Length: 453
Image 1 (cartoon, rainbow, N blue to C red):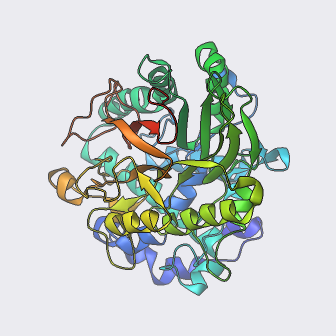
Image 2 (cartoon, rainbow, N blue to C red; image 1 turned 45 degrees about the horizontal axis):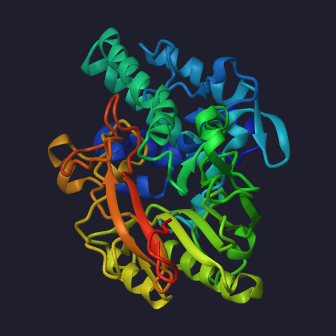
């Protein structure tokens, strides 16, 4: 608390004295779903877990001292962990890319307030002190994990297992993703929409001749350099020779209904205009929905409003690839139901790769979270990974119902154009994402057979 007050934050000692210090570490903290929904442990983890820095040796990011990332130094005791954690959070100055340019910041300076408008379970009082409160909860979370791992097994054993996981699911994630995009299955795609993409991923994609020669790689003008999660669009140069004509993301964001708070963050939406080699104009959009999918319908409505409000866009054809975060069995009022979303896009004159009525059991995610991660409200036991995991129909490709029809469609959670149902992913050494690939071949309705997108 003293270190936090030194940097100008309000004291949260009372939260420790009257609440957190008396909690049991598993039942009172790790299994506290409200703590998870308030994002008091996951928000600081999102910002500081892995930080891409300018001029890093071998492009290696800087990692917070914790069990759950690529941090590779010794965590064999709480004393060693705390010394490293405190120094990292408050005393380590990092050179990072921000919207203002390159800046020097310590990790604590990168943290973002937790807004009640986006995370309604947090109280108004907690919102006011969300910076120091999330820092305290993040430290408690990391400390618990270090204690648990060194109690249930030896440091040599668990740290060896961690190194194997880190190598395959973290360090090789971007290279493996790029390999899949370079494969014969996907290198010929006309449009690829990606979500939650880091700045490093974009740089590495542009540095690979196979991808750079094939695609215009388009990132948002106003990238998210804090969370480092951005929606990105690849346009095949042969199909779209001039690349993006303009970015209309700001027009979309200004088209939200007045007075309604839509839970989107910087980098979640990318919308551009482009023209193909035949002179056909398009609006291409990529979007990452919030965890509960509550932004998905408002964002789609805003895109359609933006297109209709600008006469220059009236004749553009929409292709919209999105992680809609829709649910087979949504919690009413708290999550976006997939069938309800289907009715919504149909009401806008659109259809999807799944048709007008999506199958609620046509899943594109199958993953579950252990307790070695900060979104505690999503954690479950291995035996419950199917029933309590995230197994849902979350991903869509939308288009004008009068513009296109689906010629073929596939899902992929192997990188080999194969989707293994009832298989959790990502998988070590094989498939790097927690969302499957969704691919479709669209036939334009208004042109001759043989012309495909």
